[in-house]
Image (tube, rainbow, N blue to C red; front, side):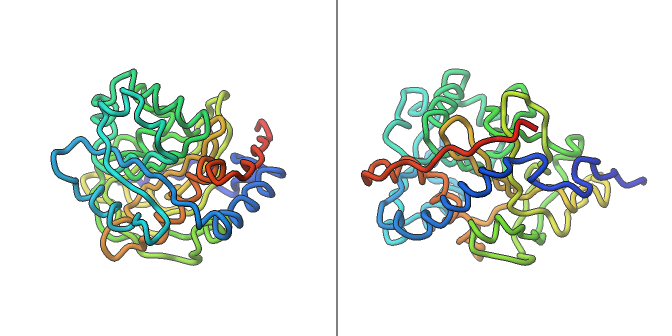
Amino acid sequence: MKACPMPSSLTGRTAVTFGFVGLFIVVMNETDRTCRAEDRGVAVRVAICDDSKKPGKGPANLLRILTPDSGFSAERITSEEIRRGRLDGFDVLIMPGGSGSKQAERLQASGREKIREFVRSGGGYVGICAGSYLASSHYDWSLGLINARVWDRAHWARGGGEVSIRMKDPGWQLLGRGGSIPVHYNQGPLMVPDDESSLPGYEVLATFDSEVASKGAQPGSMTGTHAIIRSMFGEGHVICYSPHPEVAGGPNDLIAAGVRWAGHGRSRARAGRSPPSKPVSSGI
């Protein structure tokens, strides 16, 4: 079977083309330094969306990582509570793994709009696997928080297993890891830039260095696509993970650092500090 070719947008191009440039890099790097230093004394209030009666595997892992000792105050909330406006009491919303379309269905149109309003006004959003499908601009049920579409959509159910991701310089600066890192993968989105004119480009933090290619997926179509990305939506921070660094064995620190960054704006404001400057997009 002929391998699915890599999109030309990923050949020899970087976040300087598709993401924020210039002032974005300067401002985001400054935000990263601040997140790692003074704001660690402020607990980040985290809502984990989970509609199951008992914590699902993903939410349970997140609660294990995002503890008060680590600088977080995390709890589960339901889609119904999101529709009722409960996000106002949090700094960050995490949409974990599962099914993105089912998450959208349970949230309903009013819940999806509540999330957009929350992020637009400065709240953080963390998508993991299904939550990244939900955040994308790809599907009619997506939230449209980040300018990303799904590559090789026909083979989204490509299987799972351990893969390697390659950290980019911005990923090393934000998440504290460099090089090639093993991580669990389970049919997360292969993210590539979309062309939504109303959204800024995103910054690539990590790419897939190896792949899963079962269930009819074509070998070669996953490697090099984007595994972790971040951007802004209005005043809010958005970070999306295709794989599952929250599982036992991790690397769990990739999640903790990303959640801390996503909640930076609101937690900083609660500490009486000025919010970080808003990044400037190149308009490309």
